[in-house]
Amino acid sequence: MTSVRMVEPVTAPAPLRARSLGVGYGERLVIEGLDVDLPAGELTVIVGPNGCGKSTLLRALARMVPARSGTVELDGKPIGHYPTRQVARRLGLLPQSPVAPDGITVTDLVARGRYPHQGIFRQWSDEDAAAVDRAMQRAGVTELAGRQVSQLSGGQRQRVWIAMALAQQTPILLLDEPTTYLDIAHQVDVLRLTRSLQRDGYTVVVVMHDLHLAFRYATHLMVMKDGRIVAQGEPSAIVTAELIEDVYGLPCRVLPDPETGRPLVIPVGEE
Image (cartoon, rainbow, N blue to C red; front, side, top):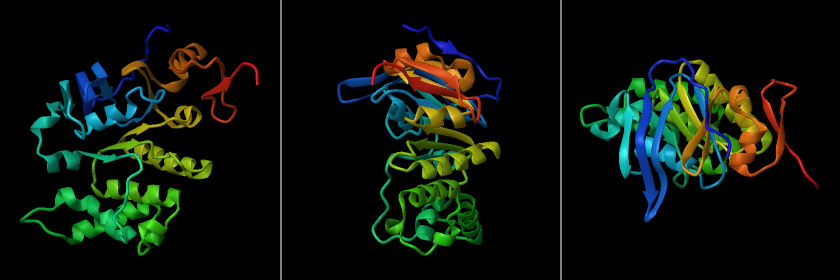
């Protein structure tokens, strides 16, 4: 088995991390004893084979599934100590294949991102409207404002969901397979948006399957296998043919991408 490769970046303290984390469903334990730090201000992409625990980890970090053991910490405190609205002001989660209510328009869906900022003594305000406008502009969906979400293409819908997350005004964004079912042009479109957000100071975490695009856009890569993180760091520093074969069982060569110099996985063997 390939030895674990960890190349630690020099960053500010991780705003979101887990210690000795255990998570499962029913009698099946998916993650056990996992330590993870999501570096501040990076675009972290988590990759690994189906069933390795990528989405489970993301949902546990967002407090969407309970930890059976260990802790998740947000800004240095156990996430369970925060009220739900306070967590929603610090991190936003875009789950796999979210479903919009029937008949809802783009503006109304994006406006739902302001929910954490509402309360008994604080109703809809000019500040909320401005936040929705900024989020839609940033995600490039302003021209879709009055359309029903159900009428949009897959790429447009993903941008609308990201706009809703941006309307929350959270510094941490967790996106679970946001490029699934999109064609290559829309995948690149979404990933360019996430990279732009990272450059503006957001801490962004994305679960992906496409290794080429993951290696191209990640500033920090986490590779998972069997509920463990087996390698992490800048993609060019950690990705090897041995790592890919160990994690995916795929004999391959790893070459530099002619466009970016990032790792490019080329399967080998008979056709």
